[in-house]
Image 1 (cartoon, rainbow, N blue to C red):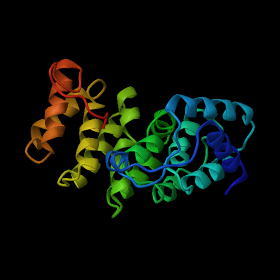
Image 2: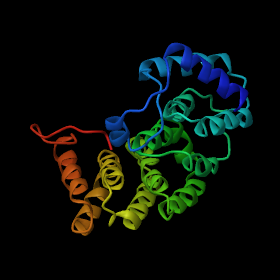
Image 3: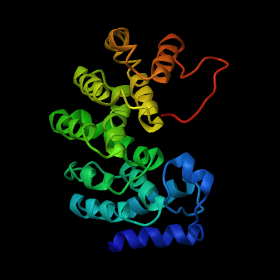
Image 4: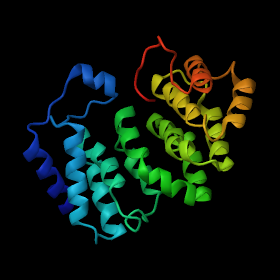
Amino acid sequence: MNSHHKEILDIIVKKSGVATQHTFLDSYLGNTHPRYPINAPTLRTIAKDWMRQHRDMSAKDFAATLTSMTEGKSGTEKVMVGILLDNATSDQKQFDPKLFDRWLDQLEGWAEVDAVCTGKYCTTEIPNHIPEWKKILTAFSKSKNINKRRASIVFLCSPLSQSDDPRLAGIAFANIDRIKAEKEIIITRAISWVLRSMAKHHRKALEDYLKKNEKTLPAIAVRETKVKLMTGRKTGAHGSHGSRG
């Protein structure tokens, strides 16, 4: 265990308790990793305070800490990686993004994948390095690991919602085409999420894509995306509201 990882974990343990597992949550979150009884706001406070105290940490040391945490036993440690990334400096984010391939080998289920593969890091780094990220995400979409296939599109949700660069939509459409026949909810809901993320800045391209691919896309993705385009919301006024992706 990396020394910085141990330092962060000690704080988590101090502010929570014994790591536990719960059958219902295991099923909902899509993994079987134990979790510490600690809420998200407390985790965010821990991450913010710790990163403030380590502003001079190099990108290399920061990446080593994140690698160690993804290899931790608990889902809490793995989720914390995404929260630390949200609080990192611009310089600290300049590690080799190919590391995400290694990190995703340690993640399981939508909750862990989304915690690490969405957020402020993606919003800044992916649009600034599109050719490199295209190679990474294309490889993920072809992976035998379903968590990497989900990551191949959810990585793009934040950038697509804030950037009108057509290259981002192009990568998303290509990756969706590779996995759209899959029936697992971890994939179908991800497709819905990434399509909805295009509604504001890529509306015309999204409408054209839906028109051409409606019969081959997951029904839930088509339904929720059409509602998003019409109302600006995920579901209709009387629809159910589930997880974001």
